[in-house]
Image 1: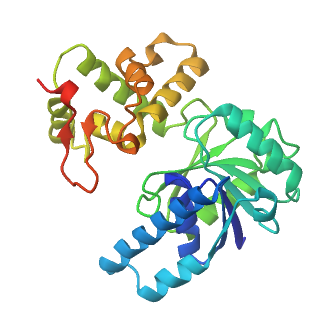
Image 2 (image 1 turned 90 degrees about the vertical axis):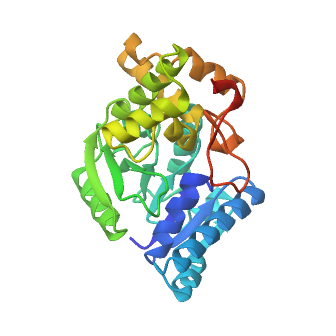
Length: 296
């Protein structure tokens, strides 16, 4: 496996492309607009510059990594002659099903189709293809070049051969792959998202403020980041989408998203990506400022 296509040049997509390219894979980075590709490549360059500054890689490594990435706005051209496609589009089931049906039509039947979905059923995604044995989940963590974990999700029909190959490929990226079965939220988000949702409910009910909740979890539970700050990093819209997948998948009201989370997403306060969530994120600032509407 030498040639990889990554669908989506957003935060996860450009991180996945960066990681594969850094380890010598030829990567086709695909998005629907040149503007999105330019932003993705700029993010990769910026992150490589950080690695050079920290002496994690050399300037030569940076140049070879960038040389391994070719941008495409034409998906058919981008997936030509690849061995693996990793989809990293928005966490939307209809969009993912559309992408995988299209990929099934335009790629060789031997190509493995992987999704970076953080909660959506791999079995459901695989069902729209003619190769369910070659459809698998590769759930990378953000930021991809740094975080070690990759959840490898087996759909109902994913073959042992494909699972073994993707596990081995993940190790070649200096990652630690963990094989899990296909149930809503898998492992990471089945545990993480209800905790974040409960933290939001704790705020919603007035038990404590943003900074107080995050401080309790950081100092009391040894979490490197509080759940509300983490929600801002993930994206409140993504948190909401995952909670809805959990609720629909298990049919249990305990997975109902907190009304405050719903309202914030509807109001456009989605975290870092919009500049404000539970915290205000000033352009270029490193300091966290509790959003005005949550100050005591």
